[in-house]
Image (cartoon, rainbow, N blue to C red; front, side, top):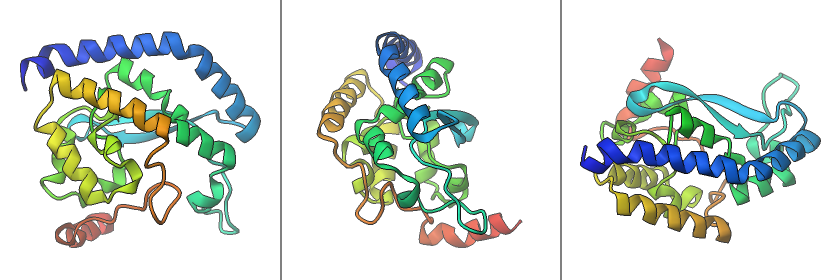
Length: 215
């Protein structure tokens, strides 16, 4: 860890998140009201995600999907549960605003690899697992280089590249590029999905992952 990552990044993240909460509180309030009217309760979606060193934390987002289920009680596919209102939330990244409180708590950073699902943990290669050497971020290199429009392998390559080169200038460049990507609404969906296809692991990890799930 360099001087910036050791002494500056966390206080900087806290101050940025606090200022964002103060200035964006009217936007967050209106968004919460609209979610309540359009999608009902709960307004917030929460889910445990792995953070730094794989430690689990509860991530918060504005809800963007319904709870629609099939006759067996299983949740319907994302593309069915994602409403037009939910698509607008995601395209503007307004659904991500509650993660500012995760940053204040220290679970996340402003910039870092995005926190993914817990069930992906045994699927990573040794190199891909290095994404957990830093706090997960509200945005990151993968988000400004294609977001959901690039492959999982490309995402993880960008994540590891970030882990290897955490700098003040680099973080602010990513923040600037994120604002531009959000305004242009780039990379919201993958080629075959409304969000992103399920990560099913690498060839070298699939057998061990299946064994882990069977235990």
